[in-house]
Image 1 (cartoon, rainbow, N blue to C red):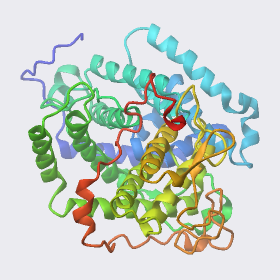
Image 2: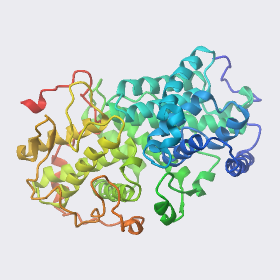
Image 3: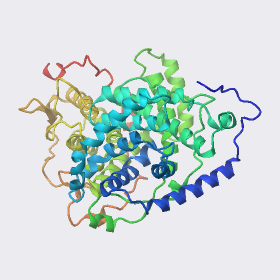
Length: 504
């Protein structure tokens, strides 16, 4: 790097945290107000609004006030590369909206943005020192490729992003070197957010691909904190839905800041588990695993963690169901689908422990599997039909997740998994549940596409009761004896995936 990172007498932030925080907040509110005066083409504005609504709250890749300002002024936090990456990532929602899809026709139905971002990337990498927008674009490309099932490309783009933040010095706490590097409060904020976005995405990729995480936190890493917390009290409004749903959706606080900070905190715990319990290069001793479990248990807080896992699985199912009934499958992104997979793994454990194929746990597992199968139809990297198609060439993240569940179910009861005429597999109705009947549970208002049935929309926005779940006491004695399926959906499913498993 060109600059020494040894702190000196002048290496102090130019302003105090409180003063810097207030400056960022004032600037953020100003930029949000100016956004309403935008004269961008309608298609471009729709795609950007889709990004801010459906992508930004989860991953925080781009600092919105700096981007929207520099979009108008050609400043350092916006580039043609980043803009095209954001537009390309949001095309899926515009193409699904009949009122907007025609606006993409001048842009080759959205394909133009995807082609341009890759051309821009090559230019950016060859034109000198890296920039923050280049890192952000790489993260978006990684997320897009992951959703399309192109896992090698997703891994490549994310790896490039992680190398570049090291080259840019973003892995260090910018507050300590703001004076030496002449960083403004906004620059420190952008770098801080970007480090934790990369840290979080690194752990997500590790789960998707079954590989060790790359980025590690250290004593010199940026703090897990955000100065500009305006997005916490912002009003979240679903974008791109039909007018009736938009009109009926009640105003809701976004909680974007606290959700991101807490998700990053969970990713720190996840990192420890991945390195200790899911390390393919080194098998940890029992003592190391127990020590890791005890240390991370302290970070989770007090409580019966097995009960918390079961209750969390139930909460994930209810919230996922609420999301799909409100907004449809087309707005579910891969990380939400992965959360459903983790819930399914807990339902599977219950079924394995009790051998009760007519239980609520089996009902929940069947719902989860059906939803994961269905989501493959809305994902750009989908498999065909309402079943998990076993391809000899490649596996999507969802396909690998389903395969893990199917393996465990077939070993538990071979009659549960049935081979379809086209070579794919699906769950049978051995528990007596008709896959085509209208459900009588809280999931009854969802049709086969995952959209709410007409006439039930006004009930879809009620938050379910997540505080209570009845659990048979003997279940706690049975569950520890069962080996759970891997949290890494592609663990052991790389290039040498055994394609013969279902043929044995």
